[in-house]
Length: 386
Image 1 (spheres, rainbow, N blue to C red):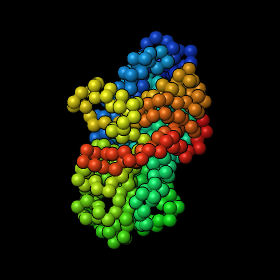
Image 2 (spheres, rainbow, N blue to C red):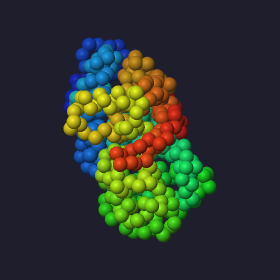
Image 3 (cartoon, rainbow, N blue to C red):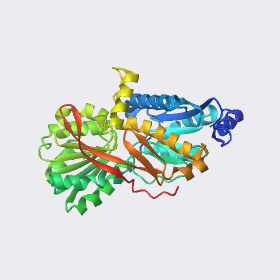
Image 4 (cartoon, rainbow, N blue to C red):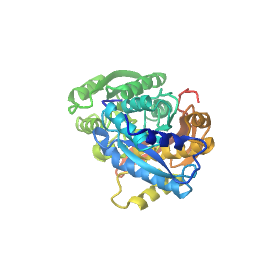
């Protein structure tokens, strides 16, 4: 995702370093984990469920003995701010409050700032859908890449729906552009043609000109690489413009909150691909959803793929730390290759500091997403060295 998006005391810095030291990670007490999530800004609607998933993950790991024998204490920071401000927040959690690891569910601009801040001094787990290509030391990625969400899915749609002309529309930043660039190759290999490729600012609220271009292009499929409010506004306008009967839509960042904004009535011929949907019916996914509902009750924030990715980040932190016997980045980098766990998404294995995971395709019915196809153990397409 990419958009607009140091110190307290030497004693606090020393304490943070001590938590990461191999000789002390089994000491009694707590280990502090910073969770950087959007609490403000356009992605702020993802914040409450992301926070809930982080809390549930910490409670789950603590109930089975903690992280390397220490109870996890969560420190929350706002990643919905501009990158420089989010970086200052993360610095305070790290150097000031003593965070020994960081879990991040936020955009790529903030990720870049935090990679530059941490410089592989603490492990950093990045969990949402993203554009690929992040190979800095000390960062471990659970999020879906375009290769996972599109490489198997576009040929499947080609076989099922036989679109001949695709129109690509995204927000004007690295995730939208890289997603569409990857999609072009997959589309052309099916024998179909890309007839349009455009990028819009996050502030856009009128899509009439874009929809007229889509209609006039003769497109019978549209790849939607828009985020949050832009995705909601575009898809609602798409339905009212009268093109939903003529062209299918595929989105790689249309999750449960976004779909709620779009409305099922505006989602005819809409598909989404992701590693997790809240209505997954595998035993592990059902158990997770039941635990979430039990913990947070009837007023629980809407469970979504983006929020659940945070839970997965904690599971990978636990798996790699256990294998490494430490939170020291050098040892965790070495241990990351082949680290695995069983989570709500199924079996997840880290390769090249990204993950192999199942990828689902869903369409939309009256009750929301309906999973219509699952691709097992899809690789990330990344080649980072461990």
